[in-house]
Image 1: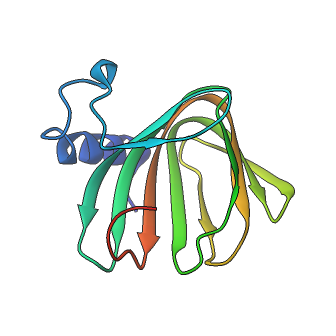
Image 2: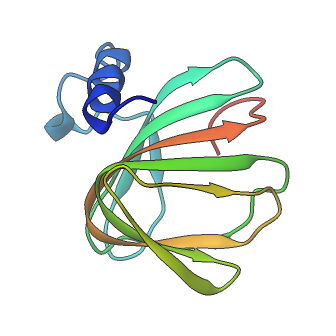
Length: 129
């Protein structure tokens, strides 16, 4: 298993061609959230799996939503957030923590600190949801 530091190094290398710097916010995905901002950098998609690196600002709240067909794996490698699964505040995730959201399960997020996450969806026909 890779350490959090190795994961940071790996993802920075993967998306180096996509962004000049984080401050420029040259992202390819922007999410509609309340109380903050969230943007993502697509890292990989082969039609069966999609991987994205995303920034979520403190105070951002993702509304409850469902991915009908995709399982979503989220890895927090910096910051802290609270998962809300099936309407219940499930748990706090911080550096090194991960969670699997099964397909068809309602979920949302409250971001407690500026955070960076890696998101993986399986399957993923076109892009990360």
